[in-house]
Image (cartoon, rainbow, N blue to C red; front, top):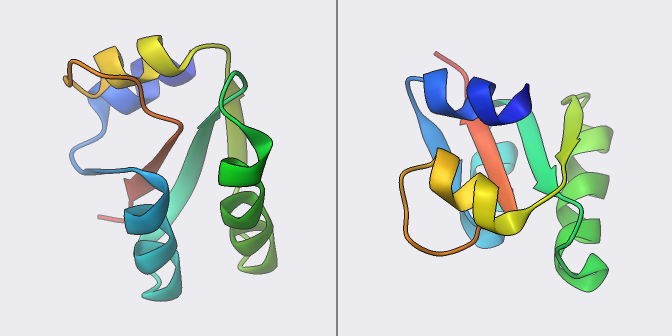
Length: 83
């Protein structure tokens, strides 16, 4: 389900650092997090999203999340940008 959301999103922000910047700038409407990513990497972004009232959704695989974004490597965090 969430993989499809990522594929259909007109603009995605891939990666933890980029997602944090986008959340702080108020440009994110939803955050997708891979459950097999390391918690120390994902936890700060999840906390920031929750503080800002941004829904957080989880998917099973970093590899599949990266593939849904059209990249050849795994992605721990993907933010779906507000239109």
